[in-house]
Length: 100
Image (cartoon, rainbow, N blue to C red; front, side, top):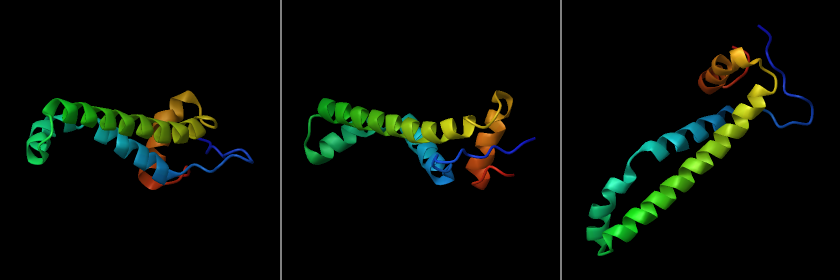
C-alpha cells in the first residue's frame, strides 16, 4: 500500500483539525434543544425562543464541524484510492499521520 504524500504548495493534513471537526459533528447530534425548558425557566426567557436559538447554534456548530473535517478528508482523498479512503482517514484520526 502506498502512502499518499501531499502535493507541494498544499497545506499539510492536520489530525487535530480532523478530530475537532468530528467532535463538532458529534456535538451537533446531541439533542441540546431538550434543555430549552430548563434554560428558559432559569433565566425567565420564552421557551420557544430558547429552543430556536439552541437549534440555530447547534446547526452552526454542525456545519462548522462538517467544513473543518471535510477539508481534511478532501486533502486525504487527493492522494488515496477510493478503496483506501476509510482506513486512511481512520489512521489519521487515531495516529495523527498518514503513515501507519
